[in-house]
Amino acid sequence: MRTIKLTISYEGTAYNGFQRQMNGIGIQQVLELRLAKLFGHELRMNGAGRTDTGVHAYGQVVSFKTNGTIPIDRIVIASRCLLPHDIVITKAEEVNENFHAQYSAISKIYVYKIYPHDMPNPFLRNYAWHITRKLDTAAMHQASQFVVGTHDFSAFRAAGSANNSPIRTIMEANCQFNDDILELSFWGTGFLYHMVRNLTGTLVEIGLGCRRIEDFKTILESRQRKKAGITAPAHGLYLQEVKYS
Image (cartoon, rainbow, N blue to C red; front, side, top):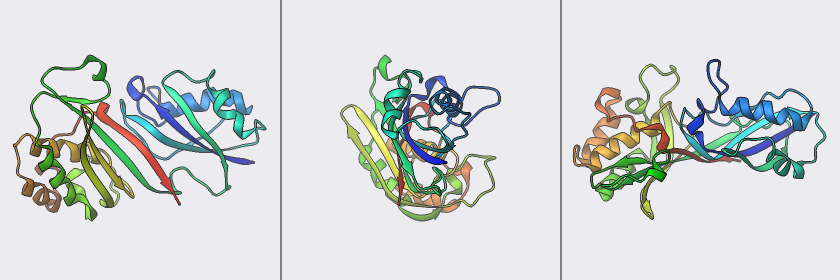
């Protein structure tokens, strides 16, 4: 048996998230069904992260076992005629049998994109959160630095989410423009459900002047979700990269 690692880019608008769904179509289902033709048997994949409905990815990673004989250097090219245009395999590797896309990951980078302009851009409606008022990006960046380090992120986890440990480590957080798009990036060892979207919603409220920079630290230390800001829309979120040792 071979262990295959695939790096995937996708536009998540048309899907009910990455994970296999009972009452909808997940990207995982499409990959397993379509790529079975390449490997000659049913596939069961493990994904590095469970992105939500409408969330996109530059560098999602999946792994699976196969006894298929297709050469590793043919997988990317052969997949192009099998996958829909909004899902693309960018890299294929044969890895150690103990590799697991989720459990072998040591950190992830998420990026949230905001389009802060008075006029909407129809070409960005599925790819960035449109905010019509000016944002104090310097204040947002300064506040974002409070998350760097190891903290209890209970204030930024979704209500009713799984009862796992809320302790997470963030190595780096940034808030900067890339042309007309404001990008908030978070590099960490792991993330709670809706954590990046809740962090973003709170930082936007600081950027709008609805909260002070110091309020962000108070919210983090409170460990209470009700004290934090709104949940940013899913369509501005991207899984940028999954890192392995």
